[in-house]
Amino acid sequence: MTIKRKKDTGEQGNGGQFGTITRSDADVAVTGSAGGHPFPDKDYYSADEIASLTDRGIRVKTSPLRNSTPQVDRGADIGAGTLISPSTCIESGASLGQNARVFNHGVVAVDARLGDGATVGKHSVIGAGARIGDRSDVDWRSFVREDASIGEDSVIGASASVGERSRFGARSCVVDGAQVGKDVQAGDGVVIGARARIDDGVKIGDGALVWGHITSDVAPGEVRRDDETFEGRTASHEELAFGSQGGWLRGKFGRATS
Image (cartoon, rainbow, N blue to C red; front, side, top):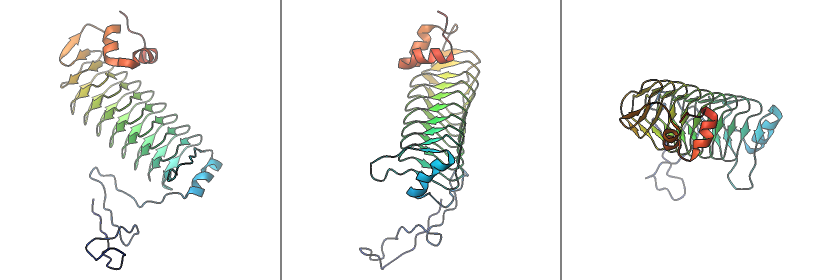
C-alpha cells in the first residue's frame, strides 16, 4: 500500500517536518492491499443519510454515545431487513443479504459477503473478500480473515479466528478460542474444538471432530485430539472439544452416542 501525503508548512503547529493527513483525491493515493483487494475511495453516508436507510427496509440502531454513527459506504449492497448497529463499519463492495445482522463495532471489509440471515457479533471482523454463508453466525471478537469462506448454517465461536483463504463447508463449527491457520480446507459438519490450533494447509474431512493442536490432515469422520485418534464420537469427547457450549452444539449438530 502506498500513501502519499502533501507537505504543508502552513498548518498550525507544523513546521513542515510532518505531512498533513488530508483525505482527498489530490492528497491520498492508495494503490491496493497486500492481498489483492484494492482500497477504494471512502464514501460513507452521512448521519442523516444513515437514518434514512430505514426507508429501504434496513434496520438501523441508534446510540446516545458520541461518534457511534455507523460507517456505511455507499458502495455497499445491503439487503432488506438487515440490522446495522452503532459503531459498525461496512466497506465499499461489501454485500449483506436479507435479514443479516452486524452488531456493535463489527466490521465487514471490502468485497466481503454476508449471506441471508448471517450474523456478525460485537467487535468481530469479516476480512476483505471473505464469505459468510446463509444463517451462519460469527460470534463476538472473532476474525474471518481475507478471502476465507464459511458455509451455510455454521458457527464461528467467540474469540476464534479463521485464517486467510481457509474454507469450511456447511453446518460446521469453530468453537470459542480456536485458531485456524491459512489455507485450511474443511468439509461439511466439521467441529474444531475449543481453543484448538489448526496448522496452515491442513485438510479436514466431512464430519470430523478435532481439538488440541492439529498438524496433519484429518480423515472424514475422524475424532482426534493432537495426534491421538479415537474410535468414534462420544459425549465425553464432545464435552472436551465443545467446552461450555457442549449442550448447545449437540442440539444443533446432533447428540453423540455414548
